Length: 141
Image (cartoon, one colour):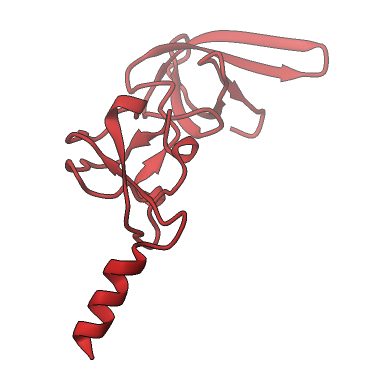
């Protein structure tokens, strides 16, 4: 019976569209994935990426070894701000806008909440990372 199943699998091949995205080289943690970093394997791995657009531009959370599938749970949006990076803190309320220089205390991607030290007052506030790498803080911090 096992021989029959094996022969059937070999003759029919993998189901149409059964492809998995794998690493073409070892990708260290925090590597932003490009087209040269991936390859397509003919088999299917549950939970792994199947579409190239799902992985291009994402960042590896941990090391992914060559030939291993790229699981979507192991990828994240790339960090825009790094720890100790200088940035602009922006507080807006209606027509009022206040800006100050700050030092980021943790890595973060666009939309992430990060802690930032206001360099003028040495106060630590929390704010959202903006696409221009500034930090938008609210009055409740």
